[in-house]
Each structure stands twice: as C-alpha cells, then as structure tokens.
Amino acid sequence: MNAHTEAENYLLDFHRRIVSSTSIAFGAVPASLNGVVHASSYHALASMLPLDDNALSVVDIGCGDGHLLGLLAAQKHRGLRLIGVDMSDGELDVARAVLPADIALLRERAQDLSIATGSIDVVLSHMALMLMGDLEQVFSEIRRILRPSGLVAFIVGGKGLLEPVRHLYLNELRPILREENISLCLHNERTTSEEGWRTLLSPSFTDCRFADVDLRIDATPTEIWDSFLSTTYDVDLLSSEGQEKLRKRTMAALASHCDSNGKLRYGCGLRLVAARAR
Image (cartoon, rainbow, N blue to C red; front, side, top):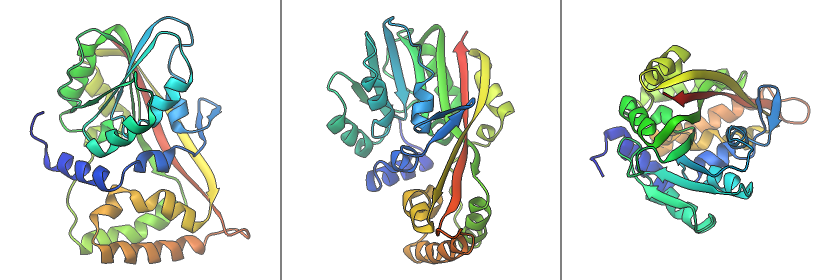
C-alpha cells in the first residue's frame, strides 16, 4: 500500500476511533431521490442497481462498516458478487463481523486497486469520493476495473446541512475553528460543483447524470448533535475544550428555534452522480 497523505492519515485515525460514524449519521434518515422516498441515502444508492437476474459484480469504494454492502446482500440478487474496498482497518473489522462471508473485503486505497481489469459491472460509493486525493487516479482505477459501459454511481456532499441548522451550526463553528487555527483540508474543491465532477469524469466516462438526494427529519437538538454533528470531521479536529464549547453554543442556538414539541426540521442535501465507462 502506498504511503498515505496527511489527510488520509487523519481519516484513518478518525475511523479507528469513531467507527461507523457515516452509517450512524445517514443510515436511518429517509432520503428523497427523483421524487421517491427511500429508507436512507444508502437505499437510494442501492436502487441504482439493475433489477434483472443477470450475474452482477459490484464494488463499494470506501465501504466503511459495510452498511451498503449489507443492504445489497439482503436483496438476494441471483449471481451477485460483492466487493468492499476501504483503507480503514477499524471499519473493515466491523464489516467482517456483520457481513456474509462471501463478500470480499479489501484494505486498499482507491488509487491502487488489486481488482482485475474489466471484471466489474458496477462501482458504488457513499460519502467517500469527495474526501479522496488524486481523484484523477481514483477514476482511472474505477474505469480500469469496470467493463465497457459499466456503471459508476456515487453519493457525495451537495448543499450540506439544510437551514436553519446550517446557519446556526456554522455561526458557532467558524469562530472556534479560527480560534484553534484548524487548517487541514479534507475536500477537493472540484467536488463541490457539477462542473468539477464532469471534468474529473470526462476522460474515462460518458452519460454523466446528477440528482439531488434530500434528507429531512424532525429531531431534538440533542438528537441532531449526537447522531450527526458530534461525529463530523470539523468537530473532531477541535480540542476537547473546543468541542464542548461548540456543543453548548450549538445546542443553545438550536433550542431557540424548536417548535412546541422541542424539535426542529433537520436534514442534509446530498448529490448523486452517475456515469458510464467509455
């Protein structure tokens, strides 16, 4: 395995300490895609698979604790071959404990896959690609393992936290980040726009499509903090004092906007990107 970047070393450490953070945040929040409400954004991504009975080889890049792979396995698709790829040993340990034994799990970087050339029908990824460095090499590897016209479909960040939670949270987060001089950047700027994704995909893929994936749920301030905000990378980068300061300030800000039941509308705007191998 090639040497890790500074950002990768941080992500490895984070997912060793806070396992399953992504599935905890997104695994039980209903998600709307093209007018259809799915049980979660993982379910929305799983819906991209063909429904026929043809044999199908599927790779999940950045599979984490195996949440998406588990959903796919539960569909009992005849002839389905599943492979999960992640660089985190902590996440893969959880995946191995819960997934069927016939699902292959590889501890690898997406930039350097051991999967055979032209052996895969579909590559999926949930909330992982926008965190990866050298995305040209990532997509080169995805194209290499895909068969001609093979599908790549992935969910990434989009609009982010929806209002009013976004405004309230960022108002409290930004000054604390400045106070603590946090500078580690985990996002590639090109992954924040449709144009950026098209530029990354165009050398090896065609028929690029984009769709909004909207997550919305009513929750209390404590539920919002515990299930989502507390396990974000931004919060984790803060000192313990900074985290507690942010928690108190954010909880107070959210509480002031709750309805009579002590809840407010909480959600996140994600983006589904899909393309076909040239």
